[in-house]
Length: 115
Length: 114
Image (cartoon, one colour):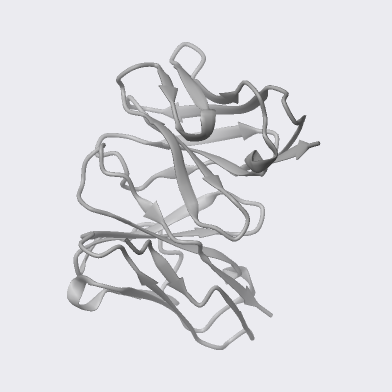
């Protein structure tokens, strides 16, 4: 079974440009989460989808970030325009259903560098 | 509010020695606690979790952690380090519902010296 996959694995863009990160969850997983780790800091929650609906987006830093999950399958996270402080590793995770016995599986992350 | 504090951003142990990675948590409600591991160029992998059942939790690869409410701790241990244990380890906390809005610590990089 394929795991959570994220594209691209690395991205280097200039300040002011737009970048779109993609996450393909495990097939059949309704829950999809985005997290971000800024260099040297903790991994922080960004938002949570249940199917195509945003369940919780309280961790989104500002309105330069837009997450979508059309059709409840893969998700994209767009940063427009990118700023230097957006650099970090963006993780995606998915889980089958709510509840304490449902493990969230993480992708390997997208390393974003804004120069 | 909930948070975790991992003591030591880098820990070095000799191969065969005890591994002890420290984690203290803060939570206003009974917590669920996790340890994740990230091997180089890999995603985060769940090592073990505490969800209010047994306080001593056994995980994969010989790791275990003990929930100590009086000390608000959830330290990760392994009796004998192996070279393949070199990775970054994250302690994390959540509450009811398990995996929603998990709060992570800053991570501890474990180096194993031959």
